[in-house]
Image 1 (cartoon, helix red, strand yellow):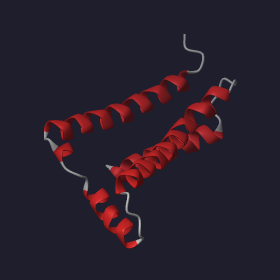
Image 2: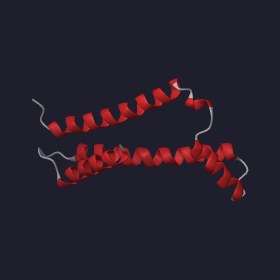
Image 3: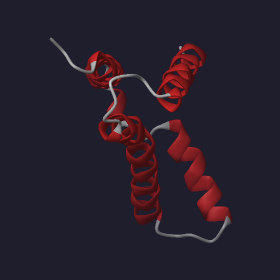
Image 4: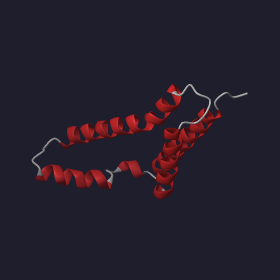
Length: 109
């Protein structure tokens, strides 16, 4: 018997979200959407030119690293919170986090 069933719930949420993004990336790859620059980076390049930044390749890498750091820290936080909860019940913070995730998922979809 699972001692903390909400750990399984969190795992399902992570797997669902990650699979959804992974399948979306595969769909874009199949449609050959990766052959050209994404519109957000085309726009960002124009902003960098206006700001005097000439090395857009480096700026894109830095931007991607910052986004990755933000995603990793925010996506890992629920797992950290649940991992340190040694009690047998969900903590209020965990319930609030799951509700935020559901709301964000609903708004994004």
